[in-house]
Figure 1 (cartoon, rainbow, N blue to C red):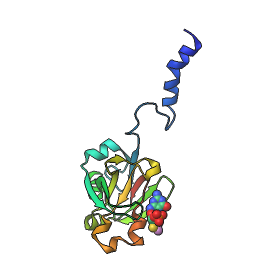
Figure 2: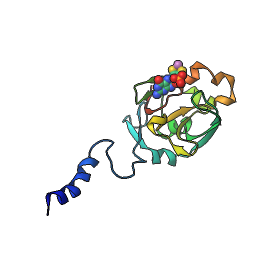
Figure 3: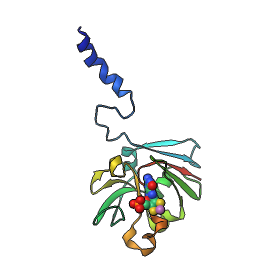
Figure 4: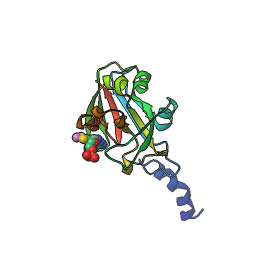
Length: 163
Ligand SMILES: Nc1nc2c(c(=O)[nH]1)N[C@H]1C(S)=C(S)[C@@H](COP(=O)(O)O)O[C@H]1N2
Ligand SMILES: [Mo]
C-alpha cells in the first residue's frame, strides 16, 4: 500500500482524537456539565440529545441581544434540577469564556427560565451565543428586563454547579 493511501486511512482516526476536530457530524458534541450538590455527588455530563430528551419548553420573547421576537427552546431549569436531584439554593453558572454568574434556585419556579438549546428552530453555534443560553421570559414582566436578570442570562454555558 502506498504511503498516501495509508495516510488517507490513518489520518481521520488521528484527527478524531483531537478535541473539536471530529470530521463527522458533531451536532451532539456540546456537553453540559453539572456538579456540586447533586445525586451521587459525582459530576454529570449531558449531551444535547440527552438534554432534549428531558422535554423542551418554548419561550417566545424579545431580548437585549437580538432584533425582534425570538423563539427559544430549552430544558426548563426546574426539570434539569429535578433530573440531577439538586440539593441546593443557588447554582453557579460558568460559561466557555469563564463568565460566571449565580442564580438563586427560587427563580426556576418563579420565572420559568430555560437552558435554551435552539433559537428560532436552529442549534446555536458558539459564535451565536451557543451551545446553551439561559433565557428568561423577559417580555412577561418588567422585573425581568433588568440588569439583575440579564446578568443571570449566561450564554455559551459550559457548566452548572449546585451550591
Ligand atoms: N457568557 C456570557 N454571558 C453573559 C455575559 C458574559 O460576559 N458572558 N454578561 C452578562 C451580563 S453581566 C449582562 S448584563 C448581560 C450583558 O449583555 P450585553 O453584554 O449584551 O450588554 O449578559 C450576561 N451574560
Ligand atoms: Mo451586567
